[in-house]
Image (cartoon, rainbow, N blue to C red; front, side, top):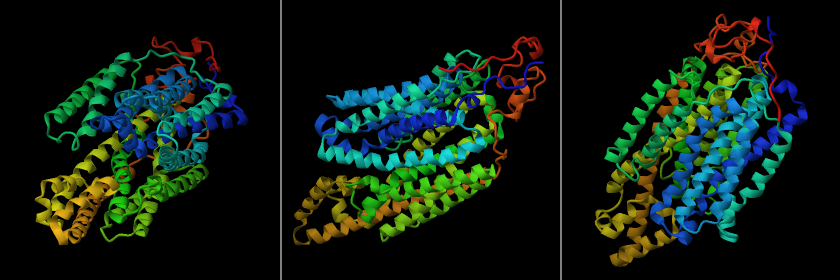
Length: 578
């Protein structure tokens, strides 16, 4: 009988020093990618003023989003086959290459193309970072580090806009891209010399057909949600066409994956109850989470009137509370070895935070918004990392990369959906409220009616001044009418955003109900599931299925496709480290 040890034990061959070095390089890379997602927003007006191409403004962000989201599920599977190190380092290199090219852009078309390159690198980094965490620590140990990684992401989300605004105002906007170069170079150096490349001893076939079909499904889906309600109407031929294309692609992709020997995304994963519940919660909370995060600054700046100069400070209370809650939650998880209660608790706190956000109106203060954001961030930090850890604890080690990246992918898709859906809700409610809150004499003026239709003018001092000047045509009562109009605009915007937050309340409440159905498995103190341990010593035909996962999805070390028992084979070889 072959040895009962699993096919490869990467962590048993790593010392504490190696683990610390690997995690330091990993978090440096993640910090660089996370900051790159947020650093550009505050600088875009200046960039467009220099490069022109206002009509392509949204594509600077959309191109990055499409590339990064579509890359995540593909790279997760690749790392399960070829190891994490080459792809993580490649992701950092591509990110800093794209950053250098973005900084040298001569027109907006070049900037969009180079942002796509950045997105490819960022998608590789974000899709692999948590899988590397799974390589370095057992599930029972990961909780402590999940909190730290969430803190890194939260700090990058706060620091990014601050750095972007400072560099744009005092140096040049090109330096918001060049600042990535030393950070990325440091991460590459640390990983190059300190991270071993852990490779599985078996090389499955790469599912090229699955990669093509997945991209053909994801890209039109993301385009549909990115454009729906903003560039095109939801029922426009363009949006319906993209949704139909994505639906057909999903059907074909699912059919193909069920009939592929080594699929890009094993459909059997969704028969694992823990994975299925975690995936559903991640998707629907992504809708509520990103939709809320995206429009909280608009409420705070547009309605309450807080300065937009340092826009990163607006969500700082939420990010700080998220980082603290994530750290505490990780410690509790690691000590208790359980997570279901924390997940339900965190989602429930998010519901409470969304209720507080939905109750805000035109009379709300900065204190009201801060309390609501702290509550929302506390729930977010408590719950979100747990579902990633629950998935890693529930699936075989050989599927950790693809399962982790799938959760990341669903969170991104949910976020894209949330931003689009809430934008349409806010836009519809805002225009309806504007008709009752703003005098007809103002709305009937074509130039004013057009300006007021987009509440963003409140945040732009130049546009705000132009609207104020237009009221001089009303004579002596012009400034009084202007003040009344601004109050009406703020009241309309407050009502619209609060209604969108109310939708988030119901979405998050549904996620709490779904979380109650999660099956809890105590966090393992070893990397491999009991089924994997057994599969290493038992013929594949006799090894039990893993919670709905067929035996062929387990590490193919006990027997081959021909059914030859393990006893007839030599002991499995150790992994190769480079």
